[in-house]
Image (cartoon, rainbow, N blue to C red; front, side, top):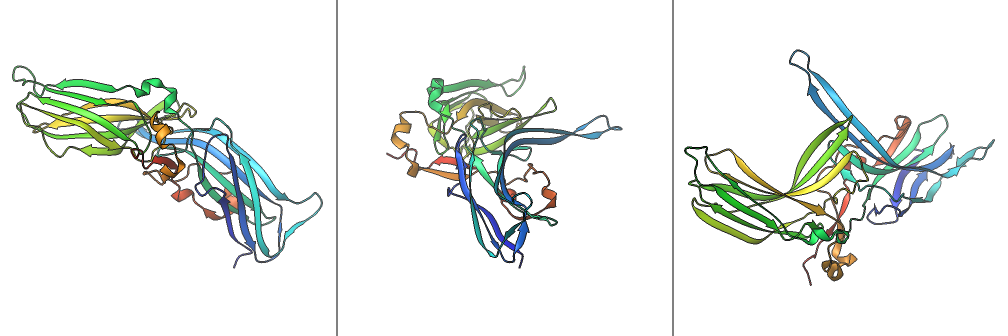
Length: 363
């Protein structure tokens, strides 16, 4: 049995999700088994974006691994909950202890985000400082969710579309083309909403179109040391069950791709991580390895386009669910934590929580 046990952080909210400018309310709890002398009890809130990746550079005889790192700080608030007076000692007798805390978040925080290359993460670290001994520390991460109101951009109500054609061979044996039309009803969506799309494929060629799919793609741009790294993650995928015969036309109208809980499109508050979204339609003709891709950029927000918002804006119809990716190791370090006894942490299993409009189409 240790002198201090069950050291933990508890949020007042059941789901620790906060908007920029909101106040975090909670408390730290622990039990003291034997009388102990301490310096102070403090809690620190920290929020940072961190990026790291490696690349191999140089010739075969002189190849080396180059590291690219970048970091941005958004939040660092250190609050003393209890401390000793000058020229005096502070003791804690055996008992259960609770210390409430209130931390006001800044207004310009970017939304939480997790990826193996980079992350935007917010964490609370509570510490009991003990003279001539290891400090006791407990850490807990939380989600910051910026509000992205799709109604502020009227162009997101407009339909989007792209048309293209693909020739399968070169002259003189080139066949007639495959002509595809791909369109979306609008350009702005929220998680839980369905991306409604229409596709027309006019296969004038003499080959079978063996595979077709529509995917929601997350595009992430990382920046470090004047270098940019692009990463793409498939969020959702719809694969068509049938093929398109040669010299035939096939149409799919009002097909739907449901958006899972994901972070909104970046709003520029983070300069080293930028998140955007694309809807991809791709197809491949039999006997060929070449694939044709058609892309339409969209915006993911947190407040739906009206008039839908007037019909469904009800907290009971919005759940907050973990991101489908991760968890990833924490890239944020606290000063002097190597000298602390970490009693509890959620960092290795942390996933941000994002909104999901679970009954978006219900009346």
